[in-house]
Length: 211
Image (cartoon, rainbow, N blue to C red; front, side):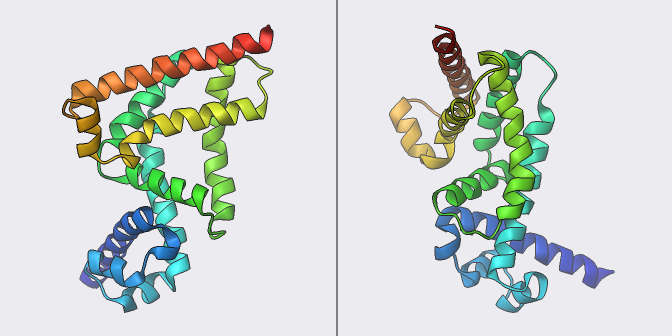
């Protein structure tokens, strides 16, 4: 039993370290040696639990997604599209500001968008598609039922990139730019601003469609 528990813990540490390293460096620049060093494990452990770097990447991607799913989408209520948008942005900001699953997944998500590896194509379609659809449904509920897919994708990109500032800009640089500490008050202000800004933009698109 002890060996089995030790094995589970080693695998978990490797996945956690892989999420960080792949998210920081991307798949191609990340090394198994660096991942093992951060996990406190040897290279043989990667071969034993994951076979190779490519399989480790795919498993790390799914591991990060599961944490993201539990922390973000499962928290949305059944309110109006406007209320759901505010909830989603608030939860994203809260989780992006916290080191952990959500941040890991978004970093992996963004690096995969910029430099596709082709290693998670099936997972991408299976896992990301339905979750993107939730956001698209919220946006469509605000704009109107006849919203085209490009407008949905552009609105999605705008919302995610605004929230993603917490991941792409160092905290010290962000605090310098905003001239105040990144505390709960500022995070709430950011969430409110992104929501108001996004909602106004989405509604403007809706008006343009009907004019």
